[in-house]
Length: 246
Image (cartoon, rainbow, N blue to C red; front, side):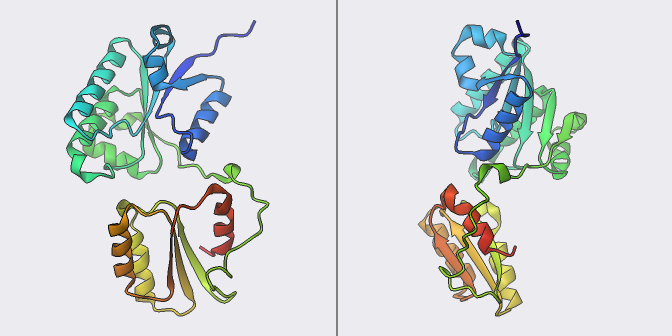
């Protein structure tokens, strides 16, 4: 009879987020059992059996009530001596209105964690500002690629769809269009370069209509900047990569 696997909990349980899916699979493949955090929290036996909790974006709290609930959760985990592993994805929340809650939670998570995962060296600087006494807990594990998640046999490209020629140098941004992603900086650079051979293709689902208008204003009618405001499904991702030079 094999040794019983150590039970771990994972937050959040997002099957549409490839980072979450891949990291969960890596934990499973390392010989651990992985359950949704909220599923073990609703089951006393599972909660008592659980040894480790992995948190991603747990600092996001949109209201004072949400913030208080998360503080209570962290307190319970501490009382029952659960080991917390905290992955820092962002130095500040995407919604800056609620930054004060996030910073407080980030500090508490850093203090309580037995290990802090950073996706790039800049994480150390973030932790230094929030909870400098916890810097020794930081482990840098570079953000993985998603090569294994896509069918690379697709040789199709979309240059004809966007009227790009073989002489064009195509720069690609593909993914959700959100204000914090610095898409405006890409547009600004292409505007300043004024190179007729360069094309910037920006494809993805926008935050809202106002943000679409803002990006269009930034582009200043530059014909070398092409927008495709829509959700790009997974089965088209490789075609976009094949279209781009950078």
